[in-house]
Length: 123
Image (cartoon, one colour):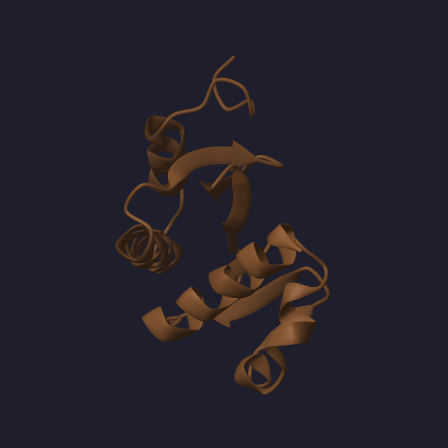
């Protein structure tokens, strides 16, 4: 079934992104490119009806369009707390970090969040 966690492709992620309006579409494309630059072999999946990325069998990041920008989902309620001050300037909940329209997450921050998620998954 397209879009399920068991039969997904980068085409499902393409479809999700293509369905968004600007500036969210461009922001999602940038975040996707950043994640794939950090982990070129990441598997692109759909999880909870949103684009996500698996590394070493673990979903390490997700993203979704919002009315006012995009959200980054670390797929863990612990990652943003562990990240601490490096995410302090972002509006967030326990499981999502909100990126306002016109802003971008740096490669360094995304890499750090993914590393935290992988470290938590390995422990």
